[in-house]
Image 1: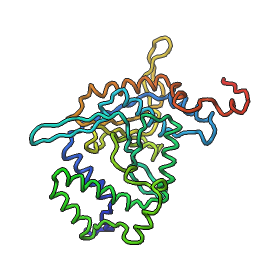
Image 2: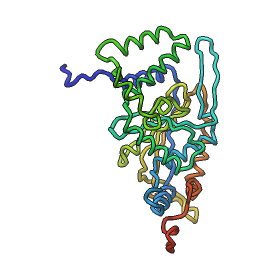
Image 3: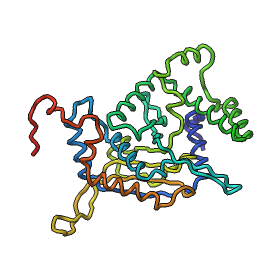
Image 4: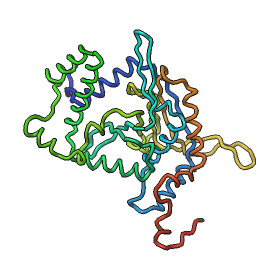
Length: 322
């Protein structure tokens, strides 16, 4: 066979390949498909969002980040890191107070990068929206290869401090020898780049690993009809969550008289993957129950913004709701 094209790994692909390989080699994955009925929740979101000023509107992706954050507060052990030594069968789990969400994002230049959304446990939807907008702003002045190289160097030396000498030597060799050499800035170009204030570009703080990973594949393709049923957990995290696209599906519902009927409803497929060394399914249940409660009571989202008043009300107009 003749290859149509050969593309050697760049720094981002190297990091992704290494992390995912480590995940599948070492983590015993369990996945659960959660498919809540979000008909009223989605309708409320559309109506509420449309009532706000243009600059105050928020995406469904941001809303789901808030929903998941609230769910993690109800099941805090999902927001943990595991440290396990298989040889000695010893280990411990660190559960964090702060929720730092690792979320893959498509940046303005079309490249994908996983961003650490820090302290989302203490942010409302408007603050989350502003945070993501600021990330995108700073990404425009960021050399992504240089940013990812800093992550690679940081991970390599963390491994060295843990006694992984051979791994360190191999990584350094792989980054500097052969056709997959990691490209990064040198000399004046590096000095000029580092002169850009850290408030104007992404740094290691923005792309270091978070406490849990959330990926929204639904935002990449809203008309999709499928769902992710398996995703990798990024060690030492113990949980990863994938959000799909809202889809119309036939569901059995109960009417006001208690009779069952089939009805077209909006369903949101979600995949929850967890590390079986750290969690059992029973520890996921509080998360699911909390999300069930949110989807059943969608008006709660009005309490998640800085100002729930509609734009027309602020302008002094009378709003009539049919």
